[in-house]
Amino acid sequence: MKLIKIFIRDTVSRFFQGKKSSYKRHNAEYEEEGKLAVEKATAEKYKREDLFNGPENKFRDLLEMYPNHRDIAIDIGSGAGWLSAELSRYFKDVYAIEPSDAAIIIARKIYTGAAFGNIHWIQGFAEEQLAALMKKIDKPAAFFTGCVFAHLRDEEVLKICAVLRSAPKGSILGFSEPWGIEHHHLMWHVRTQEWWRSVLSGYELDFFGPQIEGVEGRYKGFRGIKVL
Image (tube, rainbow, N blue to C red; front, side, top):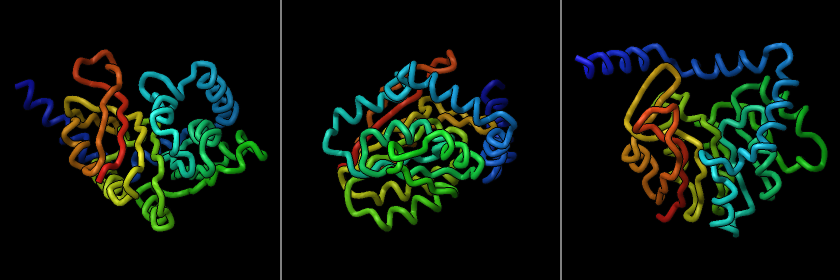
């Protein structure tokens, strides 16, 4: 009976989440009054806590593993830009892909001047903008997310991963995304290791992240390198 209830809940959640569900909620948050000040304070907090190399991310550790990857970084779902800003300190060019124009406006106000001049802000949905960008990339790139795929349906994540499978050999991934026992709730999706390995075939993946939500079988954070 419990399994039947879980199946019904997950099926209903998938049905009611549309392609733009996550975007609408996400964009509305960035349009709220005072959001600029909130994001400035949040960015400062992330820096103090070194979220860039936090247990769910370990992005600095990833870059130390691959010291020759310093040309192109792509932040998938960049939000107000805190991760793109950190990546700009390591990479020659950072491409920040974000569907919310309101979020990009805030990011541009926070991260200004020559120090962040190597960030290229791209407004649009990742599955579309990433595909267009990849046509211009002929060298290994580094792809990052800060918990983005967790809020998207399988349909959108499958399209994004299909593009990532076409990336040059040697490209790396740093994904702060949940994994473990499959779970689908409205705009919160946990996928299995087997699912990720399937949709990211050609990548050698390392699932390192800690347990999240206090729920056994749910973890967050994995990385990889394209070996085929």
